Image 1 (spheres, rainbow, N blue to C red):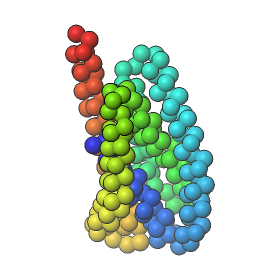
Image 2 (cartoon, rainbow, N blue to C red):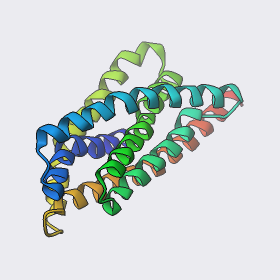
Image 3 (tube, helix red, strand yellow):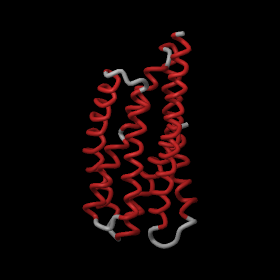
Length: 196
């Protein structure tokens, strides 16, 4: 379920963030798309490498369910960076905040993939990986943009879609943090039962 919430948050971002910036700043979409793309191309791979190293380090130090626990931290930081969008009027600061958000968001791929590898029996890995990506894409591509558009009706003015995007993203990510914590406890309990 946390994966679906990630999908809704990030799917909505990909659909609406450029439009939200255009409505708030009157910058052309072509400029916004190039800028966001360049930032993403740098921040996301750096985030993947960083978070993967952090998970490996924590696992090596004996942290149980390191991918999920580190995932909670990265997800919280991504939600905070996204929440800051509402208070930023400077384009340079906004670009830095977007870069931070994409860097922190990268934990999604690390936590999901590492957790799947840790808990999935090898004879079911193909099916569960397919289901994992089906849920992420189905919810992200189908529900994310629709949910943000629906919630935008609660706001007014040129920043309505941007405010809706931030609210939906933060709510989805906070719920994902709670679900990651719950999943971590369930996995720990199940592992204790197996060793007993």
